[in-house]
Image: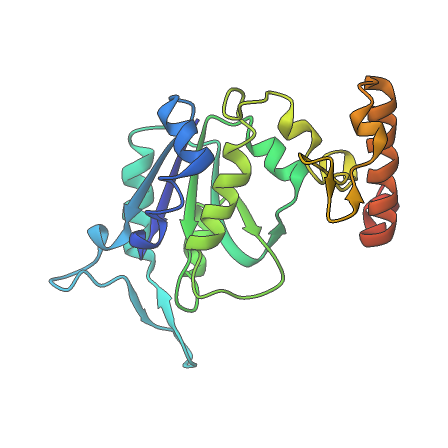
Amino acid sequence: MRIDIISALPELLESPFRHSILKRAHDKGLLDVQVHDLRAFGLGRHKQIDDYQFGGGAGMVMMAEPLAAAIESLQAARSYDEIIFMTPDGVLLDQPLANRLSLKKNLLLIAGHYKGIDERIRDEFVTLEVSIGDYVLSGGELPAAVLTDAIGRLLPGVLNDETSALFDSFQDNLLAPPVYTRPAEFRGRRAPDVLLSGHAQAIEDWRLEQSLQRTRERRPDLLEEE
């Protein structure tokens, strides 16, 4: 899979993709993430990428011309399954959406900044708008990194344990059960005996029961969606 990201501040995305699981995905040749500096397509001597919004009001707007030039430059090299704009008013990122996007081949992400991007870019190019939560950040770089991480870890071969992602929270609309590791007893608190029993079916039943209980207590809305 390849994910291209257009950003006004590409430096913000240097670290997330150079460590841990996403680095492993890159090293294995399973995920290629390329970040593109929007200012390379900026206008004039100062490489302008933003301007005042029509009608007045606080905040600058990312201009249509540099964004269109960046998008079309990338489209000349490959076809994208989705062109995604990271924005607070997009559809909320959840596990089913991450699962669906992980099946794609090429994705293009636009990290918004300032007051937003010219609406005409959304009308002409964007095929999907995604939000990571009902709050506003300084820019779309962190949301783009979150989406990339959520997708990348699902790619076959990325995780050491092929089944690990299948048991994450929100798969099957359930929160993950509690987990324990050595020592078996810590400060008077003992790991559940069933996990030490070696009985695979009993362990599976316990984990399902715990997932259901935790979901009822913490996110009952997930069960209501079924």
